[in-house]
Length: 229
Length: 359
Image (cartoon, rainbow over all chains, first blue to last red; front, side, top):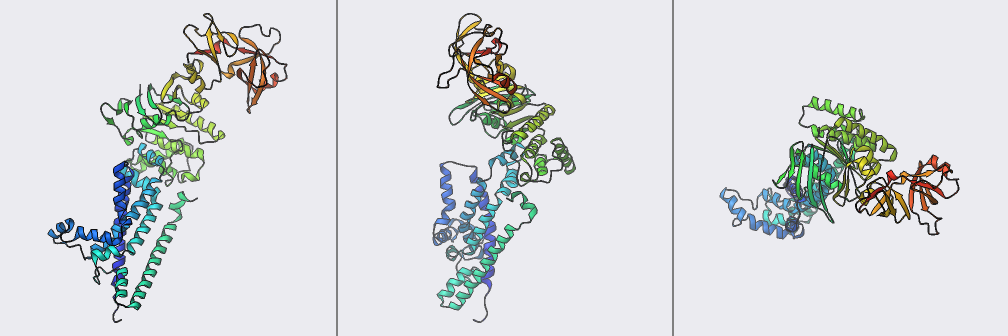
């Protein structure tokens, strides 16, 4: 090993954080939107939202390639503005967001559903707009569940491999995340490098999840006083 | 009238179909569980939408199905006190009360919250979270929060049912006080007969979604329009009845002839008398000679702390089955005097207390 390329660490972290932020917003919005609706059409909506969880990541990646590729509907449109998504860093974010989305959506929906509707109704009779009801009542009461969804999404985004490889490839310094670096190290028979990356991945995952766990359990006594058993 | 309601809504196994108007005084809505009482309140508050009808509050149309008008709950200015209070658990009592006052400047809002805390007798608790205070204090805060928005009508959904007996009478007094100061339409839903009577000036009896009785509470208790209303307002004694002449009926199930003061004309099918209206003649001199006085044998007695319910068999000693004709209710003192006297006792069914209903 001559000079070590540390870039997969930063690429992995930047991708996961961006994808998690993206999923938090879209997953929460989708869950809040879906919670107010019912009917047979919603079963289809649920199916579509959960598809990335069920399909093999390579299939998700292939679909994304078809969509964002030079001849795909989105790819064509972006190309007209001089942008190419495929095999660029944003492609890693898109892949990680799509595969992490169902976890955020599912957990957020479960969390919002278990908020006692009496609180929301009380807020409405007190003159609160629907946005205020969501922002000040539903979201804080569902927060522990939403946080769990965020952690799950982050974990899933950090471990993403298949879809990323399909749409973003292995471009060192641009799209090569830790899982991809491991795969290509093994393929190149560089077992030592593979082991090193695996160790780094374990350390990063443990540190981040442990840190998140610690942070969510120690949000200061003042704010958590209402929820203490 | 300040509040006019006329709504219909299909529910799972019956239809809610009510119309009434009410003034600036508390109205008790009495009915068994599942009669549609809470649904009625929720329709007025805008939390549920009726299928048809019209709701008008102080000339403001809150709901009108013909004009497809449906004011959202936040614009109705209708205060609601929920059965389990619905205090936001992540806000302090002060923040809860301030929730509906967001539009006010900071110092004005603080002044209002302080005044409301004071009035609800929970000053000093504004920094506590709901789960850190007692059930009674939670209820006071919830009432203060509902009144904070200066609602044009106040709806209370079983406000006392979650409290224990001791707190209940205390809170009842407080509600009465609040009603006096409030002087706007207040609707109180309950299945407790005494609570309904004490807190409401007017009474509405709801049964399977329909108004079974509506009007002055005294009149409904004295002259219930139907057997169902009599039952729902706590009457225990009924007998099939046949008119004999203008003033007398034959009470078939009680096996006797009764003088009644109500108009017998018309085809009344049943006679009824409330348990506490049955008296016992204590002097032995002219026992059994007056009108509506019958010998009664005690089948069994059921004691509560202050009152005793006596199950009576009229005319002859009861059989082994424990069957009885009437339930009478007497005070503990009366019971102490009565219980050692020899049977039969002379039970008096006052003509003024006997009411007649068609069904």
